Length: 312
Ligand SMILES: [Fe+2]
Image (tube, rainbow, N blue to C red; front, side):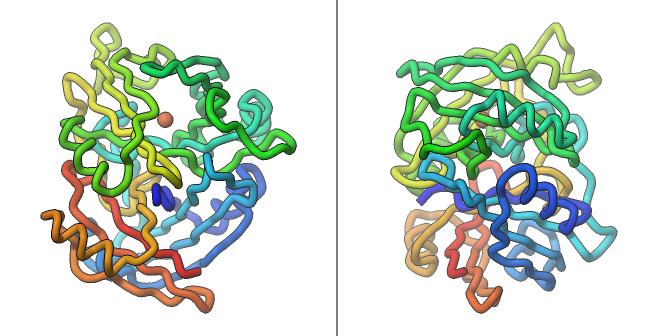
């Protein structure tokens, strides 16, 4: 059922709720939980304590349905820092992409709200089907890369004013595209929206010394496998490979994501039957009179991914 949410580490959940609600349209607070987060030992090296707020965009449509999960680590030394030297496409989660109605207008509004421009609005189309899109990038106040996309060559939007909608896809780095595609195909990401082998030149300024030599940028191989419903994934392979930017679980910036399932117990049984390691049994956390159910599992590059059954 696609990507349920992207998890972003923040230093102050209240400030992030305010920013994402007021400026990015994620004004529905589905739950706000503080406490132990069992089941994440394989990612965090302990049972972390944290505050987690799940936000939904009230303008979410089938092409931008995903949510944002704000995570503030409360134990240890607090939130770990952003992994150093991340440009885009190293192993680890590297962006949140929001579907928007009117990229230019939303981009202007986010700049006015204090975001920094990372890529000015432009139009493009992507191979092999020539699907058209408008695209821009900003950094939120905590440096998370927010991609703004309007898939003008697909189903566009509901009518209405310019606005950010929900999460359209999450990008993350991997090391072997064929292995990653086969893995996520079993989780429902079966339809290839695009595949590109070219370096996307507007991203060149993101690749900086000492991590990168500007005259020798890596090749980028990107794909976007979509599920029949729900938000998509955008795995990226850099050649030569970048360094590992997963960082510690809970670090500031985009750091994990969840895939939505309707029955987590059945989904875990299916994963295990397919030889995928689930990290323990599904956890159930009571939130707002409902239940947040999740289980972390091992994906091929060790990115922090879980299944989520949202009963809230
Ligand atoms: Fe993207």
